[in-house]
Length: 211
Image (cartoon, rainbow, N blue to C red; front, side):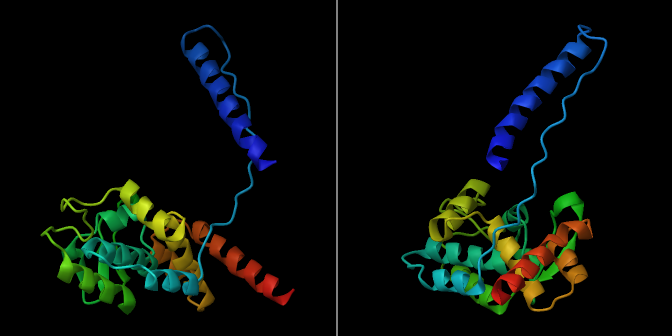
């Protein structure tokens, strides 16, 4: 099973590290390497649009930090940005309903549209924010929030990671007949093969509805 293969591969990796160490020290004339067990790729987890919006509506707003949480979740879902890109977003990167992604994977730059519902949530959050910062999402000390903080926010309301909203974004775009090349560009994927996994998700969903 997959669960048995993962600990096996960790042990094999440790053994291979020892073989590499022994070869570099001259204890062995041959650089041995044991092949690891193949683990099939699992499909990304995603949420439905209804699940996301329903949970957002149920967020109890007691302070500007609650409005920040709401804006953060909607921003991730509305743009499909990686969490590293979200946390590095500055106020100056947002203009006329678009966000300029500066620190993307592989140093690529792209411009992504922001859904109106997310823009409204961001404006509401910024109006009540108790500090000034060039960064869009900050903590109570006005410092950019960390990856751990972002994870804790999505865990609190959805029991999942920020990356689930990126998967949801891509899946919903495909369901709405957005072409795969456009989705690739919006996500900032270098290879189209990485984006193709969402086609598998939608195909499996379609088949399950027909059964």
